[in-house]
Image (cartoon, helix red, strand yellow):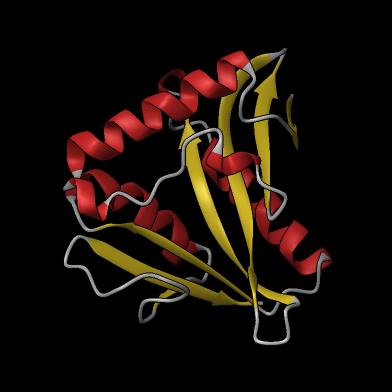
Amino acid sequence: MISIDRDDPTRGDVHQLLSEHLADMFATSPAESVHALDPSALSVPSITLWTAREDGGLLGCGALKLLESLTGLPRHGEIKSMRTAAAARGKGVATLMLGHILADARARDLERIYLETGTEDYFAPARRLYVRNGFTKCPPFADYALDPNSVFMELRL
């Protein structure tokens, strides 16, 4: 049975998965278009990271970053660091993780969830996952700028 729980991005196996994620991002996108966070950046209070595990083995991870509004209260969030371990791909881990993140966002009474992903073919499965779950393309949000290598998406909760 797959369980999803909060986790520490600096934990050994999580750190390794996030390092693989960053390496793949830099291998598939120009450096200026890589917006993935390293484990230390994922350790800030505004970000919650979860891992999916089965029998203790790491299957994947995902995070929710709270975005402050003009009032200083978080009303929006951003999905960060969605990654499925290579051995677990095709087993529904990303769908479970996304569902968990969205449930947490709803429990926090967030109004909207955003994400940025790549335009390259490598990111096509991720884009399909997000569209299947109701995300639609949107303009850049937060501190992002238009980038031909980025797709920006949102989901109104």
